Length: 314
Ligand SMILES: [Zn+2]
Image 1: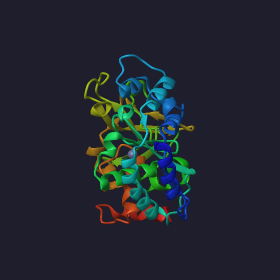
Image 2 (image 1 turned 180 degrees about the vertical axis):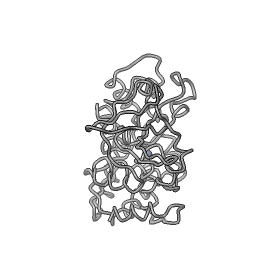
Image 3 (image 1 turned 60 degrees about the horizontal axis):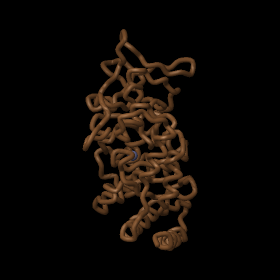
């Protein structure tokens, strides 16, 4: 009985016309399972530790088994949820209608149990996946969460938008790095932009300029159990890299990697702006700024980030 209702709501929302053809619609369990079950860019590069840590399993599993297990957590929407979300989607449509965007056809909204990604909202392909705990958030918070996730889908499908948005906060593409083994052992990736090391930021610290790239890893030292999840040990550090002959290499002092804490680095905070504390990757920082841009809200600590993003979107 759920499918006809979903189809009816879909018809109502997708018949509206928008300048940039963004169509947001609800996806079924089967459609969501198909997206998560794919060995896409994210699933195929997950670390062995990450797969176990995210699913809280005490045995190793392949990338294919990991994505299939994630797919099993997609749930169908119920009628009350659709009715609550529909006006939010309409408002989002309205607010982004004037932006020049290149959406990947339909963008689908899914609900999951949350067990597959530590109860976080995230995106894969052209899907936005909200955990059941996200769906329980107050309206305004949930709507802004969807706006944030929408940026990830748009950025994944429009490299030019991504690079122009990241450049606002000082990130530029850098050649892919082979991840140092001591980080790989507990590396965690972000489905919204799994390639940790493909963008670099140049920082001048104590008079010395160098390039850095964000690295996500766990300091937990074990596979999370019970109420613990992988977020409990997750940290981002900026890894100093050098680039030559089209390759990036981690800089070492003796054997030690040069890792700095972004929150303790004023040069980093100055470049990325102070509108959000979500600084683990330019993708996340700019997704939060996209939320402000979608509300045309420049009453933020670093309005220049939102103003420049609005220009990129026009
Ligand atoms: Zn995000």
